[in-house]
Length: 224
Image 1: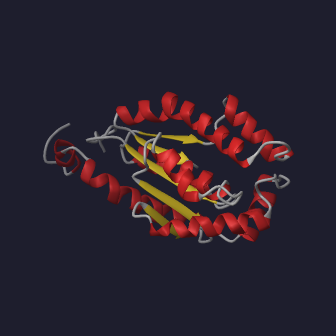
Image 2: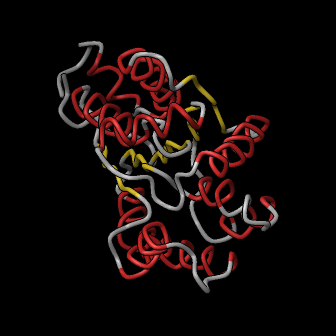
């Protein structure tokens, strides 16, 4: 297998869903599978560990206190500006596959529940940041998500992980299915089944972007 299959352009894949849906697990699975197949792929997680990401994590741990919904959304946008500038855009310019463990669709859902118009959040982000080629939303019921957090992470639920809140977040995620680049899949199935479905979605997207010479190499018709 060619260790570095070249693409015509970079590809942006966002994996979304409520807390405990399996985003981090499936991001890692997809990254490993694509690299094993010979693609140049990277993954990033939001919120980041930078200045603004730390503020967001503090809200999750300690509550919103005097932070308004608008301020909270701005924290995410400032954090994403750094992530796009330092990580996402450079990788896309190198024609890599970028996999996001959360992206701005989480803002649409989580901050949308706080009273900000989801369409406004969507527009504000699309005006500034690269639009994903595909958004894969892992759908699970809130009680499943929270039980996974407690069982596998051995953690207490943070302020973003309360079931009533997550139920409303899930509804906004499900409403996104009408968007042409969004695919919602059942996140309650076994990890390997979810992994295979996500990989197939990714490969269907990537296949037309493989350079013609690379396709011949993959079929063994020319030497790399």
